[in-house]
Image (cartoon, rainbow, N blue to C red; front, side):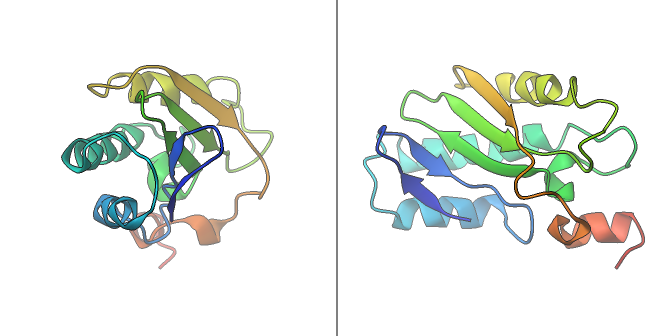
Length: 143
């Protein structure tokens, strides 16, 4: 997980559910040398709320939320509080492939202070079970 600025002036918080947590993200954000204009307290709250929102979205075939499954590859938060998400699916032929990005967009849109939300469906790298958190592995009896 890292927090970085890109050439477009966007600060990037990469949320990777394989062992990451919102506190680690906030600490990485504080340590990064970016021109983030969002106050640290607000960024911490926003990060916590984004993770909570992502945890409300479930893969209908697996009883674990998409964050813990490791389906969220990247979350960008720009200074205007626009959010861009890169996510994947457990399989390219997933029956809800056309619907799940909309579910993620709707969940993130409920977070207080968020402006525009863009969800990109990506398949590189392909998802595999190693991306799941320990919590997900325990829930699926894989641990």
